[in-house]
Length: 549
Ligand code: AMP
Image (cartoon, rainbow, N blue to C red):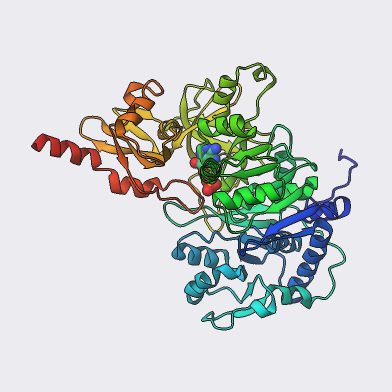
């Protein structure tokens, strides 16, 4: 017997419809590249988005067409999120920090018909225009007067505001279609090989949105002022622009500048209560706050993910600024939320120190997600908080394959996706990531967690950033080598002393190298492949030299 409930499709357009109807006057603040903050609200944004939808239909965009965006987190990008997906086309958010060859590859692979581009990327587009063969028009996110006059772009150029106004009036109703229709597309950052396309659907996005806002997930409500710092080109800004519309919270889009001062200014001016970003953003903010002695006033919760959040960051946010860190784990392939660290009832009576320790874990699966760990033979490993192995994930917003890839080695027949992360899971389901599989250090057959050593090292007040890699070793195959970016002058011996008793003796790095800065990927992770290439023979060379002398 079938239930007698409305079978309404779960469509992304319903989010903006809801926010405009029930939170119409709620503000959206957005910062332009020149630093100016402008304001609009959900009702106005809905009207502009519906105009965009009509114009796109008028110029021949059809359901299933893929339209690319190369833009910061700004209001026009938000309109594109809803305007493109709302008519059944696919909003392909492109990470401008990828290498040019990767950009060319993904635009052609996705077969983007139109590209919507922030003016800041004029040079970038000019460099790749001759190598992209599917794009018919480039729409710059600007007014007619701002449109570049001199350029070498071979595609037709249109100003976004002209396109938007072409239709004159908004569409009457958002179209209805199957909720499994593709809605948006994001390529993985591809540290090795070409990036791979992850194609989200309306259904997956909507269920993710419903699950992610909950108190035991990101805990967002209409009383919040939320600012995703995770860019709109990285896994849909972690789903936050969708959640904002669902709960009707004031939304703040920070735009291009994300250095410590810029982040502080907008947090402060817009009285942001909730934000989300990778750890490097917070290192820059802490540095700014230390130098200026300023205080964070309004922020209550801060989601940290994308890379492991070090314990010192959780402590500093809490002790100095009274901000609660919510440590979360996810991937482009997981929409992105997989696990979130929220305490259980029994943890409420923990000492503060034990609470900090717990918070360094990446958390438990939110409703809808399942996780498991296996050894290299595929055997299940126990959830005892000790055993660690390959992490798999499954659920309605986890990808089941990649765009234009007929066979994926990382998907099995039962819906499990092999993440490439190494983790342990404890009895309560709290997961701890120890490494990416390719970054694991194997010393004498035993694994050393580079992430754990790094996180302790960055807790030293004179260290800005740290990376641990496995360097080749004659006797042990690999030994940890610590690469450090100094904040202040510091001797190696101080760092060794600091690490002592905080890590197992045999995890102690064989040496420390001071470097100017660490290379980062397009999504803010340390580019370990590059470091490994440069430093993998460091210890061998060192020992050879000392043998000779
Ligand atoms: P991306 O698809 O670019 O978002 O990268 C996903 C990868 O980022 C994951 O597979 C992890 O390796 C890493 N990652 C994300 N969140 C965390 C976290 N909280 N701790 C450690 N690594 C993380």
